[in-house]
Every structure is written in C-alpha cells, then in structure tokens.
Amino acid sequence: MFALLLALPARAEIADSPKNQVDQADRYKTAKFGKTVEAWASHLNDKDPEARLEAVKLLGESADPQANQYLIEAVDNSDARVAPLAVDYLGRVKAKDAAPVLSERLFLKGTNAVLNQHILVALGRIGDPDASQRILDFVQGETDPSLRGTAIRVLGEIGSQAIGTDLRKLSEHESDSQQRTLMQDAAARIAARATDAAQGSSLPGPHK
Image (tube, rainbow, N blue to C red):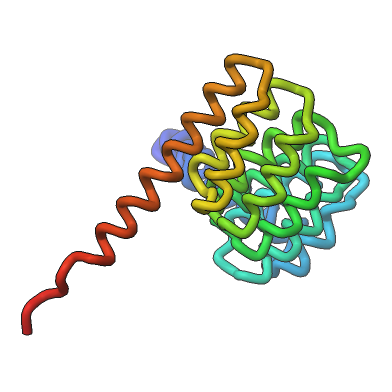
C-alpha cells in the first residue's frame, strides 16, 4: 500500500506534463473546430470572439491552398481583430491571388487606418507588381502621412519601372519635403532594380 501511495504523485506528474497538456489542448481544438478548412471557416462568424480569432489562426497556419480563399473573405469580417489578422496571414504566405482584393480594399468606405496599414504591409510581402498602380492611386488620394509613407515604401519594393517614373513625377509636385524624399528614394530603388535585372539578363549563359 505504501509503495502504491508513493507512485501516485509520479502518475499525477505524468498526467500534467507539458506534452499531455498540449495533447489535451489539441484534442479540444479538434473537438470544437474540426480538422478541415471548411470546418474552421464556419467559425469565422462565431458568437465567441476568441473562436473567430482561433479560426483565422487555424486557416493561416494551414498548408491547404483553399484556406487562402477563406482568409480573403475574412478581410471583410466586421470583427476589428479578425480582418487585420487575416490580412497578416495572407501577406505571410505571399498569397498572390489576394493582391487584387487587398489593393481594392484600400479604397472601400469604412476601411480604417489600422487595417490599411496591415493591407499595405501585406501587399509589400506578397510582392505583386500588378498591385502597384492601385497603391500609387492610394498615395495620390491619401492625406495621412504615415499611410502614405508606408505605401510609398511598398512601391519602392514592388513597383515597375513605369511606376517609378510616375513616382518621380509626383515628387516634383509634392509640398511635403519628407514625402518628397520618400518618393524619390522609392523611385531610385525601382530604377536600380530594373538596372540589375537588365544587367542580369544580358550576362552570357553557362558554356555547354
């Protein structure tokens, strides 16, 4: 009997070990949220705000390409925490199919500054040059210097040579010296990237 009593604490420690706690948490998530992207997506409008966030996390960390579509839909979620998180995940996985939606979302009425910042950063990570024209349009119409600055930096990273030319022209009429400098720097980065690409394409190939 004494030996049995001594063994009880050891069993309790095993039951409460970090690994078992993780396993229990995983079983709970599976029971509550399911195992498929469709099941997770069904919780994006859950009454429980924490469940909505968990659904976005599960989708964002999924390797299933279908998850991106649900994340794109979540960008329009009314939850002020869900939409930015969905945008962040789209940027993290460089979801190119999200770029047109995100670039247009910049112009929708009701999109707040916080979400716009997340969108611009995500577009920079996705790196789709086709989104650069809409970002330039955003720069031309936006008055918030922080948002404009982020957008200009993104253009410097992903903009085409034509966008660089437009940026330089825009800088010539910019009254804010800081914004003007940002535009010129971004245009210079675009030009340098185009030069590097041209030089790289002109290099001779390997001898056979």
